[in-house]
Image (cartoon, rainbow, N blue to C red; front, side, top):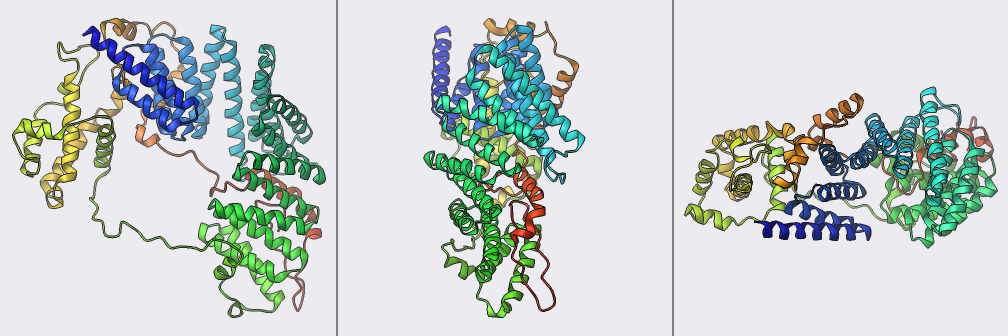
Length: 620
């Protein structure tokens, strides 16, 4: 009835508004719960549903659940194109591009962000145009940074493809800066200056990078943005290192450390300590370097950053060698060796082993003279190691095929969204819920109809049932999934039950991909006479380019479950250690000065060979 629809609309809108409020307050987990509830209630208002999709996608993006973010931004784009909402289509394309960028799918991301730019220019939307230019710059910057991983060239001496990618990023940032200046958006200018500084830094244009980061610093102070101010100080210190201005760099790193403590950001505090330790090593002030590396080590232990601990031990060993304290150097070299083995760092393990052998030779000791490094290290305040007991050792696991896993995962997800009274279902059948034979009765009843007959169709709405057929189908599948979990394992592993699983998995998965591109399957969309005309007729006026259309087909062609993956990482996660691109470059720049920073370890015949330089620090 009309009154029922009004109540449903109010409920959906109220839930969405509460979700928006929570997200604005920074509670994205709570916000997504309310948005998901709003989708479950549903709405016939297409604009409202589009806004819910967009905000759900953004909330999942901030929660780093990129598969779900991709799913909802695709729903938003599909709905916007269907109803002919050009501005909405542009925004959805931009959001989709940002998500694809984080997933490392840069080519698709560029196509989406370019679509946002084209639509914004077509509609005269200057704000949208500026945002699209910024987003395209970010995609090329991220792509260039990824291409730099494993690059061995000197700073500024980049492969042509990497240089071209980063220069394209610079071009889009410059266009963005020009436009936001025209719009008078100072905050956006600050972001553009910061990213221009970062890109010029990667290109090896350190003087240009410093110029832009100083402008970024000025705007950050203007807005009282302490986090941006901290980033600017850190970036200035990094660029000054390459110009050999170590003393000035330490001043900026100390300001970085001070602001990190004000912001209570332990990760950034640790990174600042690590940078200061390495810079003081370059200045040959080893006592101060040790002080900062010990601070970094302590935070890395607190945050359970084993990679960071290894780097700290490596750096401490190098500093103690430079001071001639070979006993302490050996202690940290052995701990570095243990951690490298634990995390599977082959290069670190080889270097640590070489350092240990050289130090033992210099001290005239062998392995039997040393106590276990783990107990020795605990005396320094490090946390002990614990072995984890596998809590699943005594659990009997069902052996599912991949199709069965997909099916049960789908049922479980839907079960969380629905309130189902299983007692009522059993009462309808006149059976005791504890009766195992009830399972087979349910199976016979629920599987008697074709799956297609249980679905609601956009073009042929059923008269008088308001979509109850689809609801009943869902209820039946939920009941089956719960019953599976209650049955005796002997029954569920019988050959007949295995055949049943195969049959259900096959029938449920066959049309999954086809359903995801159908407007009628947009979650939360209630089809009524008021919006039916908008859904079937207004999406054909301005078709996107072939490139964009082909990209969308590519996005839709893979299963959603296959897309639920974390963004690619360069290697082991090390939150307390700054980006590898910076310190690997530092390693090469400072390679010629290593002899001055080392204390040689003499052997009976000749000096010991120098150990190779760590890939993440200044010293070896």
